[in-house]
Amino acid sequence: MTAQNPNAVYACINNSDTYVPEEISSQSICIRENIADALEELKEDVKKDQER
Image 1 (spheres, rainbow, N blue to C red):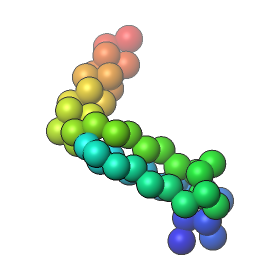
Image 2: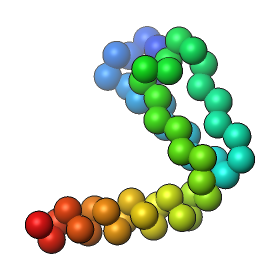
Image 3: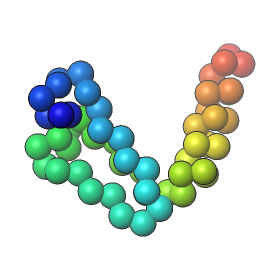
């Protein structure tokens, strides 16, 4: 589905392995980290941006 929609983004957060098919690599964001840690960092970044 991602490949068929030029506005779509494939997102993957996994602590150990990340895999993205080559045909959607330019539409992909992969984070190799614990999801709780990644979301906490994102939350902190959003808060900082809002304070500006």
